[in-house]
Image (tube, rainbow, N blue to C red; front, side, top):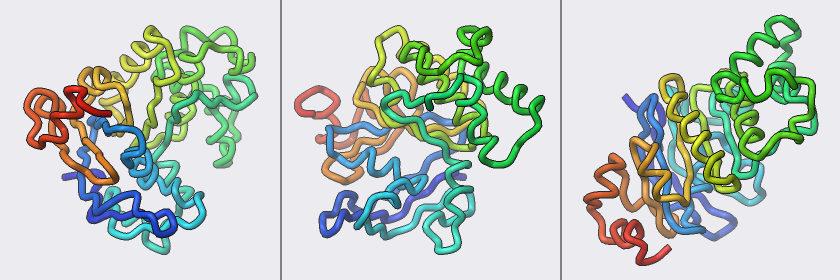
Length: 250
């Protein structure tokens, strides 16, 4: 059974229709990549899954998005609870100007956890899961801003993991990083798949083919094709997908 199910999702910025009737299902414990040219709607779609578009004025959304058994756009939805369940990692590493430790436990403290021992335990566990513990264990009280870009991004992943999400959305998480840092982030995501469901926007075809189980191709606000990644790259069903993957446009 799908963990996330979107049915006939439309999104408008004022009168402009940015997403057209998106229907798609994501299974548990998989990495799904959203690909397509700039402005095709993939990041807009990603942000519908934790209601980040609510923060933009003049946005109207119709259709249904079910996560677990919850219609996340129902009037009684607790958006704070939703965003705890559905964490997000952004394109640019965005650590807070605090220590590494304070970055990781920020969400826990916000939720009212005060037990120092428990906070330290979760901090260590999250940094280990994000594969950055060995880099930072001796400088937890140093500013996170002093880390390299790749380390900052993994601390941001640890910050998301600390609040125990079920789903992690990643909006081009490696586009600002060098190839070595990108490789480390990809290895981290592959290890995390056992415990989390991840949906990632990427412009990098090689990245999608390396780490995604499923790939969705978006074009002009429409979902053109969604299938196993191997099938999408070797034998796409739609001409538009084939043209994009083979580099004819994009």
